[in-house]
Length: 154
Image 1: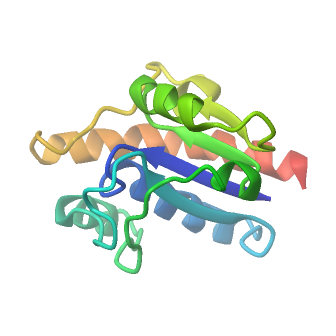
Image 2: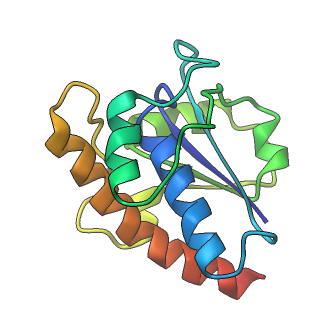
């Protein structure tokens, strides 16, 4: 099973979701059964590490994002991944426009899929530290439900 998280630049939200899911899969004993990655619809940050504020907030909760590097989503990802989860509606629209007719990946909005109180993970890039904490809160709750789904698929 392969899961790809997608946001705009792949330096805040999607790498956070990648790090949280990797951690929770290890805890659940599923790390060897699920591959996880993240990407951005834009190319501005390709090759860069996650935002220092994302890394700091994640580190305080026990997640290590330091080895990740930003990449841009491609049409080939729709064949390579089973599940592609967008962080917001804008990125979901961009993914739908990029999605080939015969891609195998199931495409969805991350929070909406897992019945969050809101549909979109807000972009914390221009906010203070509280924005990064909110992103983690939302991602942790949705990821718990994602792990349950993945257990059922394996």
